[in-house]
Image (cartoon, rainbow, N blue to C red; front, side, top):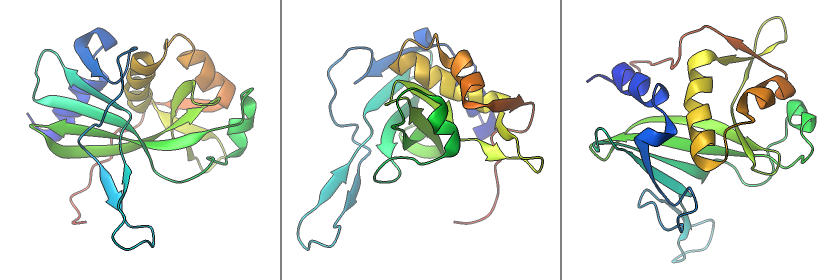
Length: 175
């Protein structure tokens, strides 16, 4: 299985294909995929962790962890104001294969965290665009975390234009 096949498997799956740990009403706990930092205090670790972990039932070598904050504070974008609750946060979603991190992306929890949406890009014409496959991917997360029934309506409310474009864009550059 290559990376593109793996991501197609994940984005094409349904919430019923996943066993959630820390979501769907289960008690939260550590994801064991933590980010440790000092934040200016020597000898004091600060731990940031994903809030949710899920394992793909048909192939347990595929797991996801999501909910790790990318930035402190509120995610400030004009389109977030289209939702009743103006609080929004930007998070990472990590895809693992055989416990190796193989893909990382970002999504936004809007309306006070009640709705998960992909991060849009601004097109040359000014439209806020999201790739159709990215929508499928984040809709899966939204369905596992929330009801998922408002996702399509929320895409419209945000003012996003769903486009048929490559997702994910993978590069061969060294990091």
